[in-house]
Amino acid sequence: MNKHVFTSAPPHRDCRGFSLFEVLITVVVVSIGLLGLAGMQFAGLRASNQAQDHTIASHLAQDVVERIRANQAGAGFYIGANITAGSSATNPNCSGPGGCGPQQMVNFDLFQLWQLIDASGTPVLPNASIDITANAGTNRVTVIWGERGPAQTLVLNY
Image 1 (cartoon, rainbow, N blue to C red):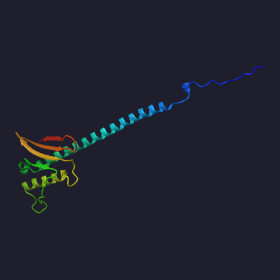
Image 2 (image 1 turned 90 degrees about the vertical axis):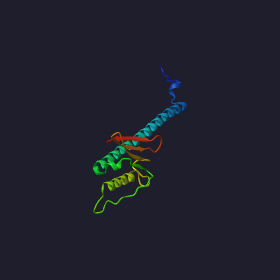
Image 3 (image 1 turned 60 degrees about the vertical axis):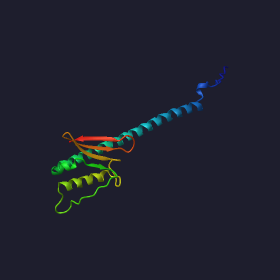
Image 4 (image 1 turned 135 degrees about the vertical axis):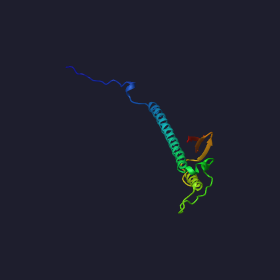
């Protein structure tokens, strides 16, 4: 009569599972990867905000040019205008029956633009200023803005 005796061999060292050291290494590697992803998320958000500000500056500059083209009789009065957040402006009342003349319309347009960038309200661009200049026959609208770091500039020739 043959009896088979089965004995179990001790498990190999590699088959016993993970050690705490291996788990620690895994946690460190995963943590570094997640920190990298969070950094990329912040960089993407910052780039998105900068792109939004640039788009708003483009619309603002285009708004200035359209106001100048709409008031051809007063177009020369816009040259040299500098609208800065934090400055003051008065609202010329153009809602009366006679409306506004060309010079009053320029003042009204500049007042409305000042309201868009002034910090006392809700400015569309942080620390913005708008300059309207003429040089060698080229009229130029320059929008400067920036909350942190170097100022951003957009120039539109018309």
